[in-house]
Structures are given as C-alpha cells and as structure tokens.
Length: 111
Image (tube, rainbow, N blue to C red):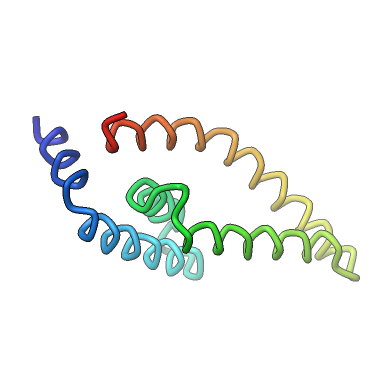
C-alpha cells in the first residue's frame, strides 16, 4: 500500500521527481569517487526518477561512453586493458539493468 502511494505521489509531482532524481545522481557520482559509498544505487534511482530520456542523463551517458572509448584507445597498453575491461562491464550491466528499468518506469508512469 505504501509503495502505491509513493508511486502516485511521484507520478503527479514531476518537480519533486526531478529534484530527487538529481539528488540521487549527485549521490551516485560521489559514490563513484569514494570507495566507501557504492555509486550504482544512486544511478539506478536517478534513472528511474528522471527517466531514460532525460537530457541531463543522456549527455552524461555520452560523456561516459566517450570516456570508455578514450580508455580503449589509450597509448598505454595497461590503460587500454582497463578500458576494455570497463567497457565489457558496462555492456553486461546495461543488458541486465535496462529491461528492469523500463518495466519500473512503465509502472511509475502508469503505462
């Protein structure tokens, strides 16, 4: 019952949804920089709250992909290896998470 109430509240309050999404995005970024706090829960919640089509998220995603490409083409072999490993992790996580995000997004949006 509580979850349904929260989903209804978020569906009808896009400003609150955006503020919470950006807050969780910042927490995810902080968690990525510091090893004590995991960053992925913040990212997942930010994507759920902001929506996959949000301009800010799409631009950050492009920056991340360009960063991975740069790492894969780095002149040092050790950095290239890290870039290939990170790219592989990115693809695996994306394949696992995206279908679930789409399903949850549809639940929140009421589609």
